[in-house]
Length: 314
Image 1 (cartoon, rainbow, N blue to C red):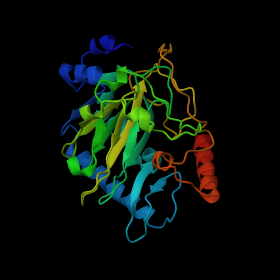
Image 2 (image 1 turned 60 degrees about the horizontal axis):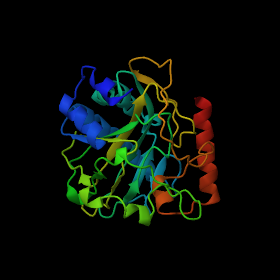
Image 3 (image 1 turned 120 degrees about the horizontal axis):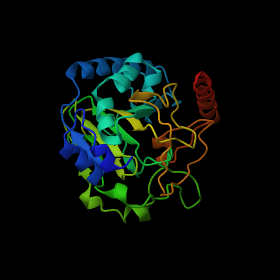
């Protein structure tokens, strides 16, 4: 479905100006749109997940741990597929206002793809290098978008999400390195070709949302403040977008229609897409890949087992 066709539908929650801004620039910030009772519920269950992580000493498919994580000082980088680990996360992804936001931007028929919760821990939470999402999980078209929810106020010093305006209309970059290894980010030479000076860093109060298109170049700086920056991310597409590679972050809810109805025809964008590695046997971590960390054989075996369990349940 084209932006013009999407804009012809009456919006559910966004203004027509906000929708047009998203299509023009590839990103959007909407302040204080999530009801505060939802934010409180999400914070409660997120604190439960942090408590669960204290017993771990190594990352796995569920908990991605920063170096230096301990039981006394938990430092999570990511909770993978939170919808798999507490019903509140799925209730929010499927029944809250953010699914309506997705419908305003991809069309009335909306499909869920995956979720994650990036923590950006205080006092050194790791950067996310410039990258594009869609080559991690290609679809037949470029409707997929990610909606992030700020669970706390986020200022400039907390490593807010930064987007390069209009980059969704440009090229898709190779996210393999010179040795043909997937690193999931732009090379140094490609990063110099984007207009980093134009980057917009999306700060805002708790209950605000960020939205970015799957092609937009984005990233975030380290969090050097004394305040954490948990960002809950849910990915949606139009119902007529279909995946053709394994989802690196699988869940039982992948492909669920959360608004409208299933598509009977697939929409194929003529622009090609880079193909990622085969994620069917499991996925380590965006952070681990970008930082080129090595996971040991026990960790990789655990990830494979966890992945197989989830895919079997599907």
